[in-house]
Image 1 (cartoon, rainbow, N blue to C red):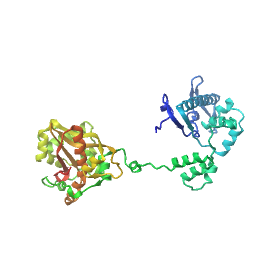
Image 2 (image 1 turned 90 degrees about the vertical axis):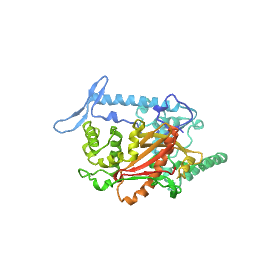
Image 3 (image 1 turned 30 degrees about the vertical axis):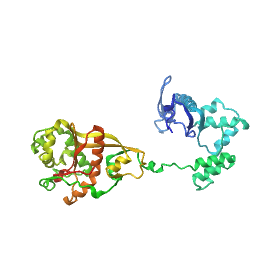
Image 4 (image 1 turned 45 degrees about the horizontal axis):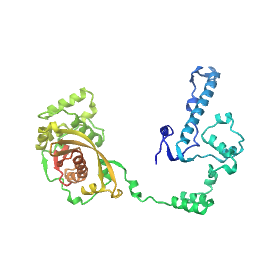
Length: 417
């Protein structure tokens, strides 16, 4: 099923076309302005009386509005022609009109130019034309169902309303209609699973299989606890998510250096401030000692040695089947066995070597250090998705996967894939 605007359908054809919303009023906002500009009349203003403050349209404004309305009707009629000529076999024209309007259509004896120009919706053209057709030549009109008839049905379920309207049909037609209306989509579970998702959304919504099999703390580089010594220079009112985003941005933008000392990082901070890449408020919440401490670890120094192969904030898109997700201990119950989901994500730091790749994910979580193991277990799902997707894209294994908590200077190696 293709859903598009009338403008978007130009040049296209389909076996069956449904044109909906034919009872909606034409957009006449431009015709109700206090001042209009006409090609012939020029500026057409509203006249305002200085003493009373009352205003009325000038003769030129009246003429400009009339011309604009006629042009609008001409354009709408052309659009209706485009919409109706998209169908090759069947055309359904759908609109809502109240009872009084339908009665006026039945009283119409001809479609004069005045009535055509006074129409406020497409139905004001289609309805009278249908009403003018001889009763025996009215295959176009299936039924007139007004708001009064629909409201009298009360709170009857929609399917019962359809079946009630179908009682007048021939038995064979009624059976076909019933079977159509009562049809159930066989893959209803899949409708609850987005076709495209992000790593973060998938981590939050998925079910982790066999959580005891994950040992994210199998390797650790722990130095002094940075979180106790660091205090923001000013009172920080930013959310933890925003603070984390600022740290990731700084890690992405800082230039390589052989020794990331506090002084070097301060220089990088001033460079970004001078270039107006980061604001003063953002830089106040940066934990520079924690960032410097990471680059002094054995992992940080290894990464510096391979700096030409380093990719920061690496965006990726990958296709994952249900079996792929099961292999990395993630369950999506709503995803059919033969279906897939498109995964989008962004890895903080990736080292792309000829035969392997490394992944490092930075976290700015705070709290009790005892909770780090549980946090690492939670984030291991995210890193497993990174590893699987990037291994597919770059066709090399993710042999080293790390999770680094900046404020505690603790690095955990994730081994469960």
